[in-house]
Image (tube, rainbow, N blue to C red; front, top):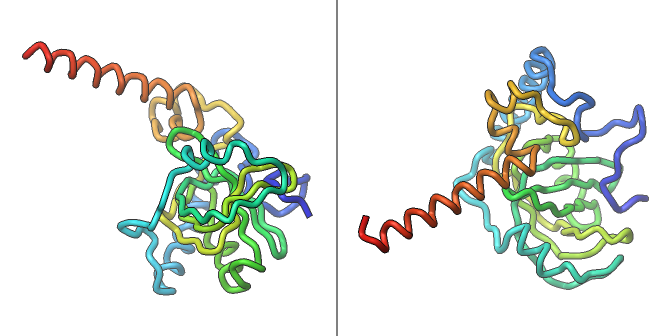
Amino acid sequence: MSDETTEPTPGEPSTAEPSTAEPTAAEISEQKAVRLGKRERLIASGREAYPVAVPITTTIPAVREKYAHLVADDTTGDIVGIAGRVVFARNTGKLCFATLQAGDGSRVQAMVSFAEVGQESLDDWKEFIDLGDHVFVSGEVISSRRGELSVMVSQWQIASKAVLPLPNMHSDLSDESRVRSRYLDLIVREQARFTVRARAKVNASLRATFAEQYY
């Protein structure tokens, strides 16, 4: 069994990225209906689709920095709680994979296994998790057999249920979509995220300089 989020073969059931860069209106309408149904079932089960907070202990960028030295098949014994947007997911029988992305674009793999979470929690993951969802996971930081920095999940919780599908993360958005759907541009394109962060830093520096000069 693979231990990484590799792309599925043609015909393989998957929740990985759609094949086109931008879903059509009909596809969006259909997927939205499915996701709204999942949200209703989630709430009916007594869980929150948009909790006020989740118990994170660190961030994805911090995990990547601290554990960059790990080699393939390493374990750490360190338990972390992180949250990120699901940008890739693949479900198998007793092991599910998801790539969680932080706001700055950094990523960590989450591994949800029957051995760690049990059948009910594994089934719930397969039932409720979609691309675009914000998910909280808690578990041990490890490196997979192929060297992928991962969290072996022992607990998970939806932090924010997405009701609209994401575009293909490997394809460019049209210029119109970049303008009309700025949030998609920031999710998909690293250059867009860099520009926003750089502009914010420049503005902060200017304000600080003016304040120091009593302007």
